[in-house]
Image (cartoon, rainbow, N blue to C red; front, side, top):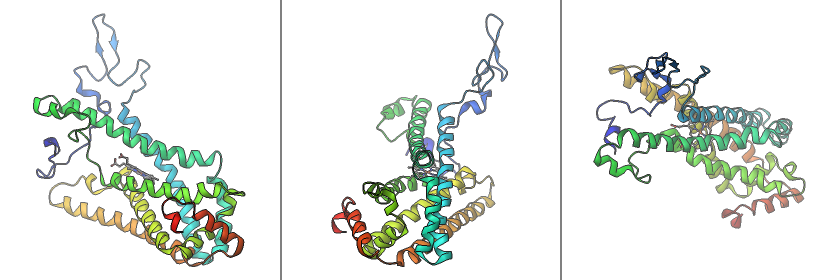
Length: 310
Ligand code: HEM
């Protein structure tokens, strides 16, 4: 582990490199600019000639990562309402179906789907990866100046790479789970005549009835990992994670523990709600009968790897 990362043993907190232009006083020039040889005042670092602030790549990438997650939050709220809250209220899949169809036009098709889902997802994940590369290069520049460390400067050495946070560790497994879910519920039905109109909550009920192990395991993982990532992610954006506590001394650990329990408590409540609706109502509605059931079987057999056994 890099020696500049030894935060725990000293009780210090490691900070990610922050955009320097947020505090532009570090340069020898005054905050309001310096006078050049010709006597003209040059704008301070981080400010263009027009007086508009110019931010670093980290600043922009951070904001892309942050604001893209607002789109999923909007979609997530609609989705939990359709697939958990309404089924729990109506206690009936056919009744809940009507509400799903009502809200579908807001997130399926053009332009809602790319704007609300595909583009924010790409922006969120790619900005996260780009942030890592930029921060790694900044670390190498800042700390790679002595000989011993310079040897570790190779891009592939783990030495200068920023630590992967808990939120990111949840984000990466969330990605294949979400892509798998979208593939089964969106990409496969689209290949059939009538497309998405074939698919509704009874398509999911059918899977629970015919393939309980894969369905329960898959949805349990998707819901738990996804809700934990989103809840901890929001806590981070709001400055409320245990690592972001400002208390010092003996109160610090108490404050950190309290935050940990509150965040996990909220996540557990949301996971519980989602599972109650999806397992308790949708999961128990049984197979679709006749022709529709046969089409569903055919669709599920198209799922790669596990589809062979479905
Ligand atoms: C409410 C919605 C979401 C919020 C609030 C959120 C929040 C966050 C935050 C705060 C991070 C940065 C973690 C860090 O640097 O410590 C992050 C990273 C990440 N998120 Fe999300 N996220 C959301 C939705 C999603 C979705 C839907 C996916 C895709 C399945 C996703 C995948 C990822 C991945 C892969 C990373 C890691 C990027 C990296 O650090 O290298 N997130 N998210």
